[in-house]
Length: 377
Image (tube, rainbow, N blue to C red):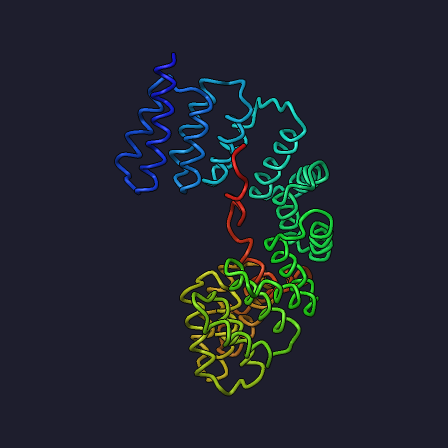
């Protein structure tokens, strides 16, 4: 038994070294060795966590799967397997992995509620996700990720003020030094129309290289959302000059310039073309470009962009209404009637396309932008 344990321990050490050296062939060989041997639970979990940390989620899931098969009573094996499946956006397998998990501590009970809530949020079951994430946060407010993900759910549900209030309380009560919470607070405040608070929160992150670029994006959006287009344009230009700027800044600068000097169509189009190329699912980018095209007499190009926009977001009342107007202007009677029908069906429930588009830069992925943040237990 001692020999087997030594081999297993050596295998995990060799796996760590192979991962650091990015030796894929050796990593695969050691993984197969761990799977085929009578490896102990702790070593399987340790090896699975090493792989997860390096983004090798499929291999990580295989080791956690073996952990559950060999040690079905292990809470850690089931939880870590569920976490790996969730990070792979395999929502049903992730939920199935939690079946039969028997938490034996308050920490484990909170962890189950938290991960179930994340899975439900990714699946669009927002009501149950809200209940589970709120309960997880109530039980363990000291867990930073619980605050972040509950606030993210509020943001995805357009409950921006509750999200900001939660994050403000989290900073004061538990997480005074958390830049991630400050960043999400700035996002919530910006979306809530609290431009001054959003900008102040973002400015506190100017010295943090990990959050600086996103903070600059939030500040620029806050100015635009407040209709301070001169500040928005200036801020966007400064942020775009920095290394690796977010491509949404091109849309924000174009929007600011359109509102300030709509006759300057070429620089507006230059920015929008970059935004559309780098963010092909940006419906508001296409909508604004269609306005620029229409202003220069290019109605057919404007129609094409609006058609793409309503394909991306069929619930955009603004895009359907402009399509209706352009079809009417160009004499396309059947299309005119169809666009009007779509507009009339949804215009009473129309949302803020600008806010929705900006929010999607942070919450657009199916499994949620924080899918890999929760560490294995």
